[in-house]
Image (tube, rainbow, N blue to C red; front, side, top):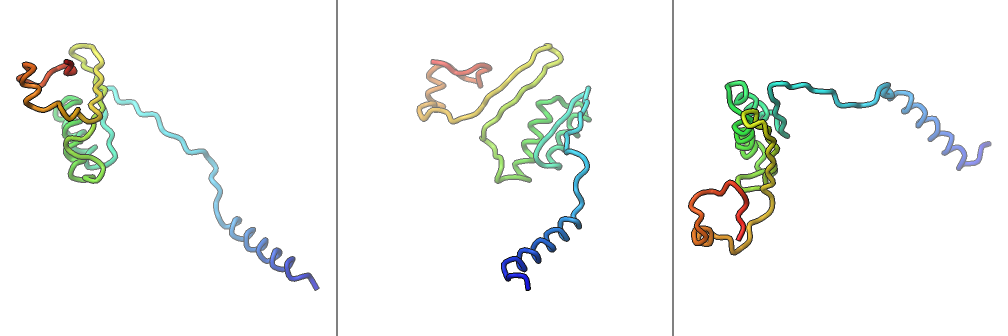
Length: 133
C-alpha cells in the first residue's frame, strides 16, 4: 500500500493536471493597436464622455471645446473620479498658431491668494500667464 502522504500528493497531482488541461492557453501576446487620427481624437475613462467630446469635434468644435465637454460629462458619470475645480493637465496643438501649448493647473492655490489679493495687485481678469508677485 502507498503511504498516506504520497496518496494525497498523487490525487492532487491528478486534479491539477486535469484542470490545467481544461484551460486554454493564450497563443498571442496582448498588444495595443496603433491608432491614426489625422483630424483629431479624444479619449476618456468613460465611453459617454468620449462620445460627447467626439460629437463636439464632429460638429466643428476644437480640442478645447471637446475637452471641456468631456470633462462636464465626466463630472456626471464619474463624480467620484473628477470634479469641477479639480486639477487639470492639457497639451493642445493650435493649428492656427502652429504652436504647442501645455497647461499644468494642478495643486492648490496658496491660502493668501484670495480674490481681494488679486484685485489689489491690479488683476481684473483671468491672467493669461502665471500670477507672480
